[in-house]
Structures are given as structure tokens and as C-alpha cells.
Amino acid sequence: MIWENDYEDGESHSILFGIHTTEYFNFELEYRESSSNERFRWLEALYSSSNIEYIFASSENHFQKYNLEMNFNYDRETSIQLYVEYQTSYNKLGQFYKYQETIDFYEEVDESSIYNTYENILENPTDNSLISPQDHVYHYTKDHILNLNLVLKHEFRPGSNVYVVYSVYRDVVGKQMNSFSDFLNYTPHATDLSEVNFTQSLFLKMDYWFDF
Image 1 (cartoon, rainbow, N blue to C red):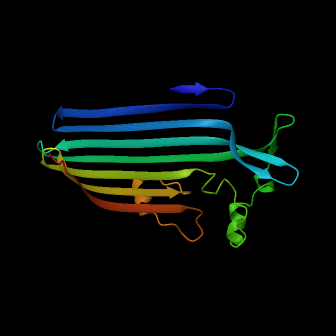
Image 2 (cartoon, rainbow, N blue to C red; image 1 turned 120 degrees about the vertical axis):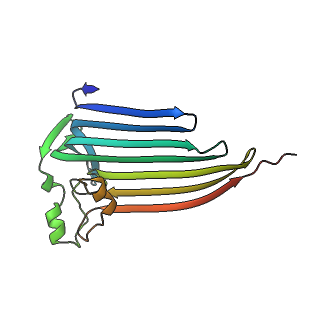
Image 3 (cartoon, one colour; image 1 turned 30 degrees about the vertical axis):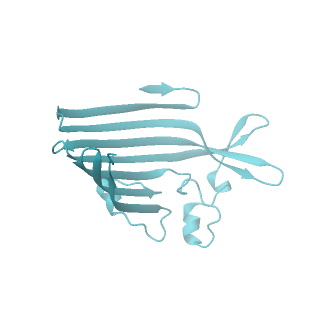
């Protein structure tokens, strides 16, 4: 799919591959990709006692997503379900603008006139009150996310089940990776403007059908 308007142009693609051999096994793999160019990407509003300045920037955006889903029924009582989702998003900011609402005009400005640069932050690590969106994890998107859920289900009597659930979530924000292996092994350095969130859990759940 291709789209274009006064503020953005881009394209997206998707591929879906599935295998459904028997009632006991099915497998699906999906891939999505999109890229776009925005003329004016909103970043934030800067407030002063007498004015509000709306900050925008041109932006190159890229997005990829992989989904894997598998269901395997060992028999009528026991099954295994696997769901994996991995997605990456990245945008590169270009020309910065201040929007003048009274005259509906985007004024070109230099980034350094609004924000501290990444180099200045490294030279003065204690002075981080202003961080450039080009480097700030919440404005400059460099995001890698992994979700994994593995479920083992066993029906030990009609209507009653026991589940073993293993879940993994990993999120790296503010760092662009070159490969899935880099993403899994990444540990931020002290000077990196990035965050890593990682959780894993194992649950045992049971439901029981009372027959009165």
C-alpha cells in the first residue's frame, strides 16, 4: 500500500504464511513493514509565562513487526501454544520548526537553539535538564520490543484444566540495533540515553468444574 498527502508519504507491506496440516497442529508467521516521511512531526509544546511554542521536525519513520503463532495438540487433553511478537520502530529527525499559530506558519529553526545537543550532555552529564528529541528516548523513537508467551494446557477431567504459562517481555528504548542477537544481548553503557526493561514470569493456574 502506498499513500501520499500534503504532510506525509509512505508505503507498507505485509506477508502472511500459514500451515494447517491437521486439527492437531497449525502454524502462522506474519511480517509487516512500513516506512514514511513526515513533513511536520509534533514533538512537544514549550510553555513560558506569555507564550506557547509548538515544536515540530521532519521525520523519516521505519517500522517492522514479526508475529509467530503455533498451536500443537498432543492429544485431546494436552496442548501447547506459542506466541512470539517482535517489533522495531525507528525515526530520524531532520529540520526543526517552531509553529506560529497566529499566522499558521512553520518557522525553520536550528535544533541547538531549543535543545542541548547530545555532545553537550556528555560533556556536562549533570546538566541534563534539556535533552534533544534527536537523542531523548521518549521523543526520538528507537524501540525494540519482544513479547513471548508459552502455554502448556492439560485437561485432567472434563471442564477442568491445569495451565503452565511462561512469559517474557524485553524492551530496549533509545538504541537502534542491527540484529535480533544485538537486541537480546544489549546492556546500556553509562552514557547511553537508553532504557532496557526485562521481565519473565512462570505461572501455574488451575480451573476446576464442580458438577453438582
